[in-house]
Image (cartoon, rainbow, N blue to C red; front, side, top):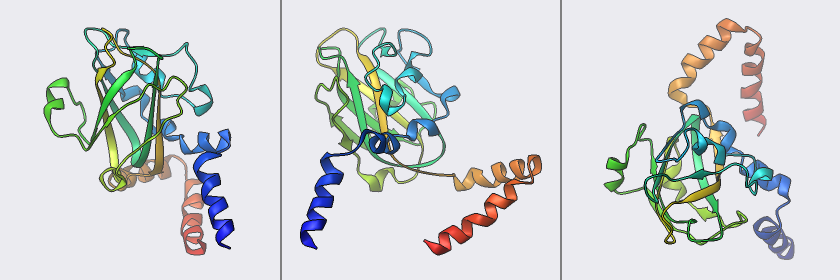
Length: 207
């Protein structure tokens, strides 16, 4: 029994199937991309390109590069409530790779002037051109995130910073504060939604 437990633990830790990792890193689908902001991006709209599916994480065609200096600031609104468990940031295997990130939660429209405040968590990064390194968050601090800001404060010495992929791992649930409005609107537009709602309590009861 203990051998099985150990084997299962090892399997979960280091031998994930790509499809399984892809599911874990599916929070990009819960981002309100139309409202996502990236400050100091060299080309308008490039910041949203780095939030992409797991199987596209090594796509070098889509990236964001900083403009005036090495800093980038992503303002990421979610369509519900997120429990953030881990983050991956991948760049070029050179001095333009991000060297440090600072995470802030629930500060919409954050600007560089706001980055002087204490972050929820900060990480010193290693170069990770293949998107293999996950930085685990303090889940207690990121258990109810409606908006996430990622401040890339420095790189490894280049004039500009380049990012190919940002992966967010965690759990998603509909935001309670907004859910009432959303449900009422959808129920009015599509009465069939009630069938789905009636199934949910039964599922919860069984599990």
